[in-house]
Image (cartoon, rainbow, N blue to C red):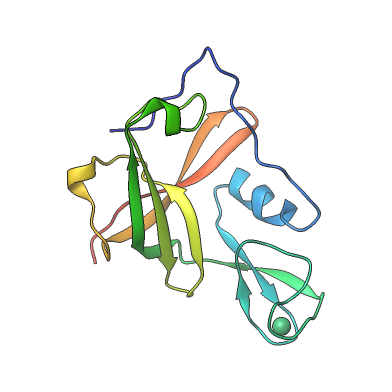
Length: 142
Ligand SMILES: [Zn+2]
């Protein structure tokens, strides 16, 4: 099932900062990118001001294949524990991308019974509002 949002509750927006602006700008254009250290080549997610390996502050944005596998997941079924404005149930996943970084996201169109750790997935872009696009994941053929 596709995630549903309650119109009665204003959706929260990502906190866009100098460090993650490139990520969110790409998402708006339906592209997935990850921060890459210009000095040592490390791919980094979530975006941050300094490379955790070499302390460089020289960063660029590297395109992702958009493909990965479910590293872990949880199914939210209790309204008190769920994110405000999202109708339960919904799936939260950590996806290990082909590039090696992990990203926290949601399944776009899946039920609990459909997913498993290691399942191949690919990114999709959910245009939720004029000013809100979120990267989510759907099953793909391996
Ligand atoms: Zn580095």
